[in-house]
Length: 76
Image 1 (cartoon, one colour):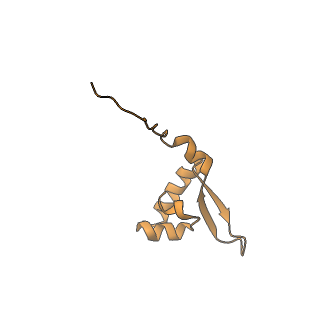
Image 2: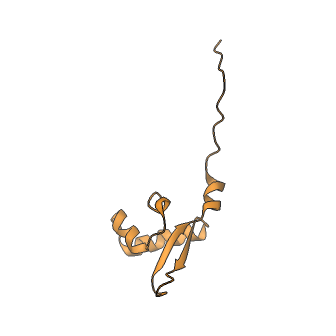
């Protein structure tokens, strides 16, 4: 997920960055895709390569809620 935060990536690039075999990367990408966290798209240039990108709306749904900052805290 950290690698995809910077932008789209090909599955091979993700495997190289994580030092994982392609079959394991494919499995985990399928799990993330089924969960709606990532989306695969075809290359606009030659349509042979696929790229993976994060689905921002899905990430917002699972993100921890923001912590509200107090203007003043009193200890008793």
